[in-house]
Length: 383
Image (cartoon, rainbow, N blue to C red; front, side, top):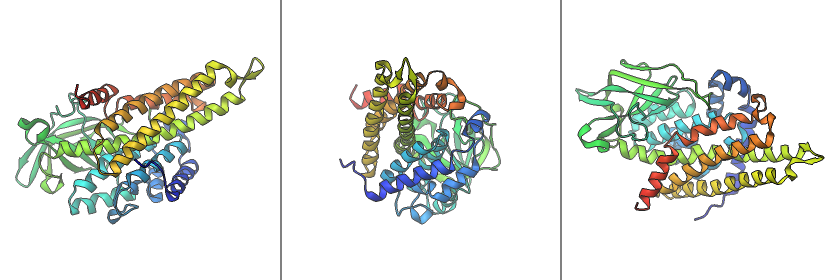
């Protein structure tokens, strides 16, 4: 396994960091407080080429084929340079659970119509899988797609959907053959404004408040057959494939945030004086810093391993689960340590320290809870 990077990849990562620092950090405290998503920043990223990392060049992407290694490094840089953790999360949500599935499983018609608009920033896409009674048990879904003349009639709902309230298109999954369980799930691309398709208002949440979150509702929503993604019953395969990429790149931005968090905390404890010396000289503080460093480096190795495996076209189910479990819980633990090291200042919103903890908590829930990751790992080990 070769985890080295080319000169071009390193230079591109630095360009992403510089871009994020210079263009994506305006009014973060205010937007977090008011739950405001910046469509302007979204377009800036599209113009820079971020969304293009998840589409082939033929459909507006940066490279001939999607390069997950370069994309992972770029998203790490984005997380390092952007103080709004929700924004890289939202980019990854579209890129790896909407764009990539369309690139991998879509028809030429679908790729030309949807990928180009998503990559250019003109459209925003959401991924609809979770339901009220289908969270961790995701394929226990109740949304039904009934085959009718020329297409499908969809009834049901999805909840906790990133970009749900504002998305221009939704890639959703529904049962086309309930008797087959997960093998009876199919994917569909549904456009905003389709009759029978409605969405909820944005739902405020604990962290990542700059990313809209809401519900998708389908009542006798007709979707033409040309908007089915892949074959009937291919929904399970599409979902499993996209989740491995999703966990890799979403967590890459979290790794970048942890790297920045560590550097800024070290700077603070060096400069903060108590009892006549830097607080970093106290063992209780220095041990927290050591633990933060350990989490960054172990998370980095797991992340790069998953990216390398996906680059080789290999399955990474257990490796992705290990990564998701370790990095998401590491971000929570390091955010707690950062607040403790900063003391009262870390608790104040204006210093932008406490926000990392609020943002990090979502990571132990979305894209599969920590408990589900442990189940995947244990089952893969034969238990």
